[in-house]
Amino acid sequence: MRRGVTLWTLVAWGGGVLLLVFIGFSVHPKKELPVNSEESHTPLRSLQTLKMALPLSQNASPEVAQPITSVGKDALALKDVGRCTPGAWIEGLPPLYIVTPTYPRAEQLPELTRFAQTLMNVPNVVWIVSEDSAEPTPEVIDYLNECGLKTVYLRVQMPAKYQKEKNKPRGVANRLAGLNWIRTNAKNGVFYFADDDNTYDIRIFQQMRWTRGVSMFPVGLVTSLGVSTPIVKEGKVVGFYDGWIAKRKFPVDMAGFAVNVQYLLHRPQATMPFKVGYEEDGFMKSLGIKASDIEPLAFNCTKIWVWHTQTKKNNPATPVVQNTATKGTNLDIIKTHLWKGNKNGTDDKSKAKG
Ligand SMILES: *[C@@H]1O[C@H](CO)[C@@H](O)[C@H](O)[C@H]1NC(C)=O
Ligand SMILES: *[C@@H]1O[C@H](CO)[C@@H](O)[C@H](O)[C@H]1NC(C)=O
Figure 1 (cartoon, rainbow, N blue to C red):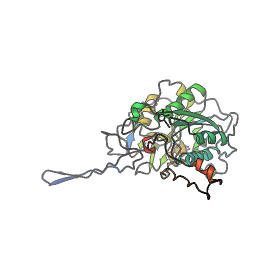
Figure 2: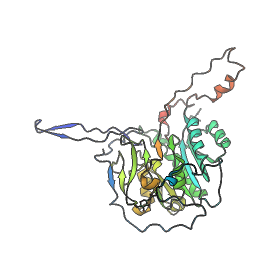
Figure 3: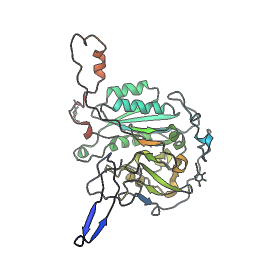
Figure 4: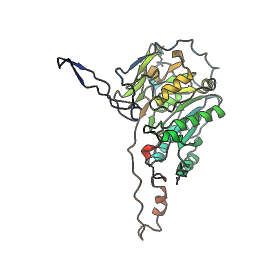
């Protein structure tokens, strides 16, 4: 999600005698850099500023296997990752609440379909799809009902005052709606903010399920660094590696952390700010996390099991021509499924990003 291009070029000084060369990190914009944002000189953030504390006490022993704690050939084998029938529910396995912000666009249904089919391989999932839209998208609701997963559909709109801003805090209102739902309905398990356009290895779900406080893991294809990840030494998170540190205490990606539901419920003040670029940092700060709360997953953050992937933007479909060759055929139905653009004529790009 890191944004903006920060290429410090040459600074001539002292009548051209001395040249200072600053090379910053070229950052791939998934979001634009907030105005006046600090540019990064280093992609590293140390955790020294975080208070150390005793680790959380271990929860009651789960009835199903714990995550694997060492890397071995068997540990990495994909065959036993728990693929299952869609919507499978195994007693004793903590539930995973997956909050997916989405918004109407041509790619919405394909993205949701792809992600749903990932989640079909994961047991005990409640998939909370939270749409930023003036009206529910019927195709989305139909799909959620058809897909066989346990789904919750929420719909909210970004508050009007933020819609007017040039740099909109996308996906915040709908993530907050998901959080609200969890606070009201969930009692245990783990939640995760999963955008509809990312790619997920199902092993990350298998591991994040056992999060006791806040777990973190690498996210690939983020900024020109290619990854955003905690820095892990001897099994402990000691800092962060991210292409856009800015002034963030927790320079993490939205897809790079999962939180225990009880941990959230014990922190009623926790919320996500409507502040572009600082959504994750603000949320982490509001949770009041300590270094010891951070559980590095994906084998001490040595595996990349989540990536930012982007589907090419598509324009609204050209209307199906109405003539004797098309009328009375399947095209009468197909045309109802084609993306016609937002009804209010607003551009997709102005809407919430997941
Ligand atoms: C992570 O590192 C710690 C300390 O080196 C080690 O004890 C532990 O087994 C590692 N965990 C995994 C899953 O590899
Ligand atoms: C257009 O947007 C307004 C304000 O959000 C909404 O009330 C109205 O229903 C929308 N109209 C259509 C056709 O989507």
